[in-house]
Picture (cartoon, one colour):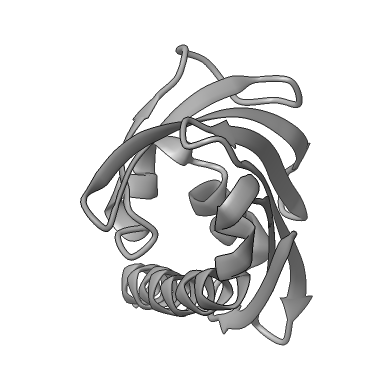
Length: 148
């Protein structure tokens, strides 16, 4: 299993940050390094048990991640688990907390890799961490620009 964590402070209140991290339709706008290029989901509000599909391209390989929302607490927590078409399972958790006039965002990601892919765990962990740093720093920049 590969586990990665990343934290960042964002100069917006938790409710504002939550609206963006729980808006999976906008993931292609800010999760570029992660490789998210599209999202399919039914109309309506997300809630625990809602399903959606992330379309991704990583190192030229296209795939999908079938996801289910596991936590939806506005202003506090958004989480989902998924199964990637390449055969691995993922869990993503985002916790938000007030931090001064802004928000502390704590992101955790777990991935269970099949077969020989598990041997590349260290390399995959570094790639996931680098993508998270790029994507969440971009989200911070985007949200703080909107605030000004």
